[in-house]
Length: 268
Image: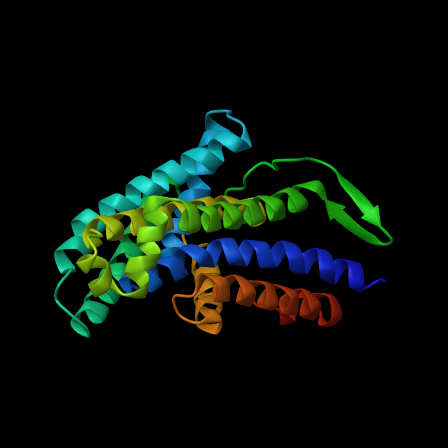
């Protein structure tokens, strides 16, 4: 009991956050075959936007969360129009190389802009929910539970969008076979733009969840991005369901390692 409860609690929360951080990356790769190495930068954007809205403007957490999603969608559309759309049609492997180079450049620019705008000092988001309760010797924070549930809600909404909306169904069709999708009248480039916008919004909102747990700094998205890449590869490149399953497996493994052997043995 002394180890089961903390492993269960930590595993569910970490798995949910890992899944929320990874689903946007999986969606982007599944549709555009684009491994976004600026993914960590988008996580940072979400965290800093929410921090500014809550700490500087005095707005509630919910407003910061929503604003981060809207900003992420805007940055995603800008990225598609300025960087990705001009590269469409060059074909693989040139597409793979060009987009990787472009995303590395984006990551450098985002980190530099965040550093210039917000400075190098650590930032922290205020807790969305205060308080805690104990289960045996394990202290469970309401904020951690709230963040975990919010991450699960993001996954549920994403699943609903993909299965029940016109753009979501078209997105899945393009991801499955773009040539067939074009033949039946699905506009591939429009769906690409929708994919980048949705993926970016998912990533920036996941960055808000991370900011609720960890300190924010301009390069704080690097380790979560590496974890997200591991999750996406482990779950099968481009598979959203696989990424979610892999996120929970890795979350529970990390929780077990942290509880049984110490935090220093877990992934950063």
